[in-house]
Image 1 (tube, rainbow, N blue to C red):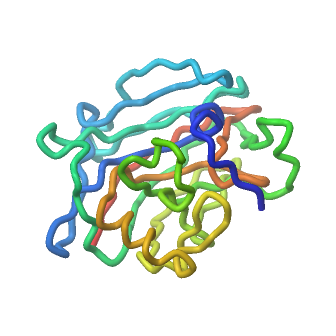
Image 2 (tube, one colour):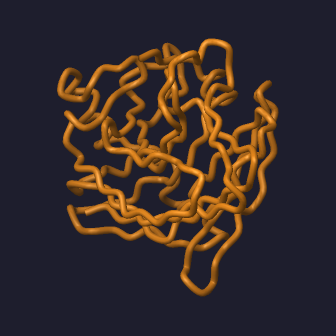
Length: 230
């Protein structure tokens, strides 16, 4: 598989759902599902973007966003933690991530992932967990500061579905930008847990785990109802 380490490619093609890590002392933490705590950043293929508040589901406490409709654009949903803790060293001390989410569709949408000329591999669009480390965006953009759960992932299909996805914080279950697994880069994997910045989900397919997904032939909504670390 191919992976790109450039920040520009990340902004131009990655469809990400981010949350700021907030786990202390090994206790289970459940992230709040309120629209005021989240922001959607929407980018087009050139990297130009805008931000807006996501939707909230008051009856089940979830937050949601719509997949872009075959426009070449990408979207990410960011969790904004209380300002005193944002952008600080907040270690992840749990043993796993667990999330419950739903993909709600109308019609029979196709999830497109070949959004760039270099993405020529055939592998269906998936959603998977993602996490990164403070300062991953600074030169030289260390590739082992960003991690994707692999093989743990959920394939996006054309019908509505509900899923509870769990991945252990086992380095052998996480892969970095250029395909190096955590058990082959233990210091940097542990460094990400100790000096975490964002956690959440990444969407992609083909050659790339996180270069984006959009839809055609119908609509699709990603609804997150629960995210725990423990």
